[in-house]
Image (cartoon, rainbow, N blue to C red; front, top):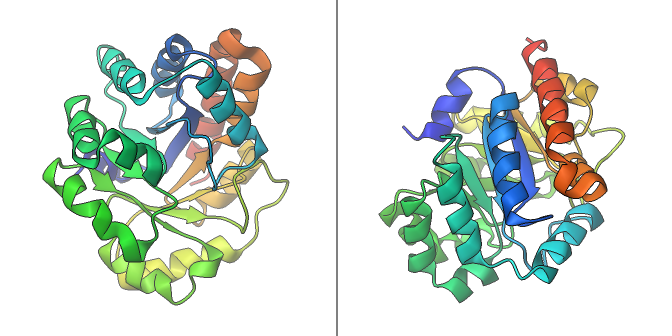
Length: 259
């Protein structure tokens, strides 16, 4: 059993996302360590990319800021190696096909294994094309996380059947970003998944408030928050660590109180 699956055995999981290298790699390292201390159970690190198709403006701008600083995939792996001196929090890399293929797929997964990355999420590789990555993931013991969205419909059962680690449930149509309300499509998707397989389901895309966290935790095994944290980092830059720490603490508390 992977350390990601173990996380969900302890209760509702709080998963956070930040873009690696925004505002700097040093701050990213501090943020990961402090978010884990504040209660983040899994941390997604985005590899900056010039065309992040699944992202809304907040995360897109974070990618642009990191790229403008010249952040490279190697620097990110080195940063994770530094994190490992202080934290064993499960880390998931969220990236796109292009950065992996450019780096070299096998080399990428090998580095993931070396620095103890638990899993990868690659939004622009559809389920039907996952064989491009899956053999390399399996060789280096990296979980490939599947995503489902309201548009997945009849494919949900098929995806659930082969999914590992947890399923990333995209709460609503469109790109990532903070939303005032979350639709009820997520509940339907989770129901379909659980009919096929008892695998943890985490809801992401748009969650930002403790109220939303508590509400979604009633139907999901975990929640994923990215844009709200990335927005905070955009606002406070190198001084964002204590603000993010407090936010994560508050969100985790809302999750804990939800059941």
